[in-house]
Length: 156
Image 1 (cartoon, rainbow, N blue to C red):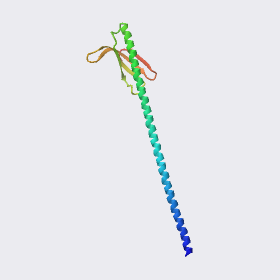
Image 2 (image 1 turned 90 degrees about the horizontal axis):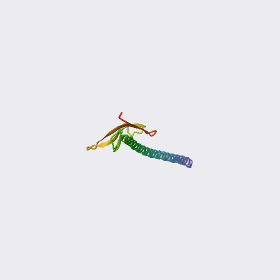
Image 3 (image 1 turned 120 degrees about the vertical axis):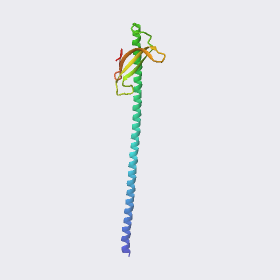
Image 4 (image 1 turned 30 degrees about the vertical axis):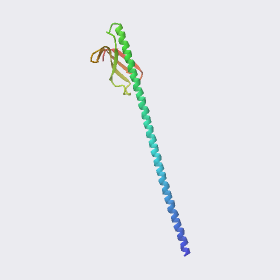
């Protein structure tokens, strides 16, 4: 009986060891898959944070660019006012020039894909009771790429 029992115990022990090794291997595989999934999720989250940071940096840069464009429009208004005041001093215009307002006619300052924007400017020498202004029209443009401003008396 011992002759049968010893091989049987060996077979059962070997089978138990095989089952244990298989279960241990499967647990290791599940742990490795879980760890790989966690790493992919962390990488995805890092990439998303980086994308959001990059988008914010771009938005800030765009806002700064729009601010610079608005400064350029104020510079244009100052240049047109100086030109209109010179025309008053020459007797070509009636003064005084109280303000200049320049409005884009093709494009807008927020569209950073447009480098050259045309403006219609009004060099005002009269403010009406209803808040409107009257004066002399200037056609102008700003090339935001080069910074060049142009203006001339008259529309169109």
